[in-house]
Amino acid sequence: IWNVENDVGNQKSYPQIVDAAVHLRKNETVAFPTETVYGLGANATSDEAVEKIFLAKGRPSDNPLIVHIANKQQLTELVEEIPDKAHLLMDAYWPGPLTLIFKNKPGVFSKRVTAGLDSVGIRMPDHPVALSLIEESGLPIAAPSANRSGRPSPTTAHHVIEDLDGKIAGVVDAGETGVGVESTVVDCTSDIPVVLRPGGVTRDQLEEVVGRVDVDPSLKEGKGAPKSPGMKYTHYAPDAPVYLVEGTREDIQKLVDARRREGLRVGVLTTEESASLYEAEVILTAGSRNDLLSVAHHLYDTLRAFNKYELDIIYSEVFPEEGVGLAVMNRLQKAAGHRILRP
Ligand code: TXA
Ligand code: MG
Image (cartoon, rainbow, N blue to C red; front, side, top):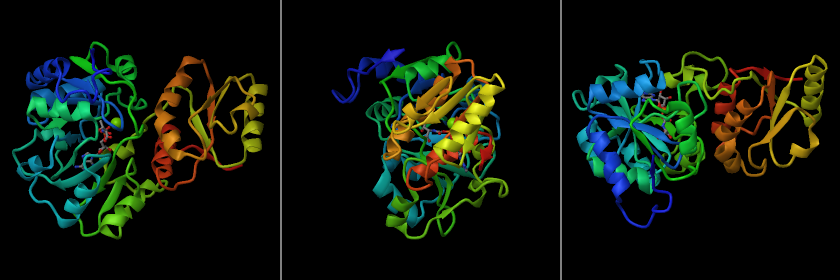
């Protein structure tokens, strides 16, 4: 563990970062913080290095990785072409939680990064530690979220260690991440940009800059295969099955009561506003209903926290699919394996 929590912002580069970068250059895997979640980084140009990411995560090999860069100038050497709308989006939201899909330039990245697609996802994270680590390594860094495949993404170094201890060279610890859900993935290879994965930058924010933006129709329940390979896997799931309830607090309490009468141990995922009004074995809150950013920030930590209790079933409230709420609901639907109750 390279702890840099007290150094963040003080200087551009510090000995811990220099040391971590040496491991990246040796084609080893290093976990590091970004503004969204912790990533598991490796040299994106090396098959050997990228293979280690897939092994450590237990990730299906058909799921491509996002490449992280430290400055926009790097981009011209890495992709086939940069469409005008991509320029506009980069100017507005890089560094930041926005991944853009470009036409892949053959021979630049390991084929393991793109999983055989002719496109590649690239982003410039808005975190001083991530940026100085990438810069110090001198490499484009492939980095998926630093969790075991299928588990909630890590928002602390502790989460990374929980999942990947002994499987990676190390983790740079800079405390909690900010946004809490991953970057928005946007395909810019078509005329009208398409959101493949909702995330930290909202659809409204994208449309402010480039006009009309579509959302991949498969993100709506059960409509065809998603264009972003990663979106088809169950993900973010706690050990106990999660059910989303589109109903009132009273509806949820009735479900809880029925399960408890059957002798089951029940968890509820709610917000600060309602936490004290439920009765169940475990009631966990992810932020405030009036502030969806706070729900995004706490979501993964809360999903992980349910595993500390031996629960049989978890009921979760739902949120409006507006702003960052679209990303929150997308992750909750995946955590629930799309089990949605409408009492
Ligand atoms: O915020 C984030 O994006 C975090 C931090 C670490 O940067 N990274 C992250 O990576 O979430 P990962 O691997 O967990 O998710 C990458 C997503 C997957 O859904 C993957 O299928 C999609 O991006 N993706 C990557 N390359 C793609 C491509 N060429 N075309 C379509 N989707 C792609
Ligand atoms: Mg992930």
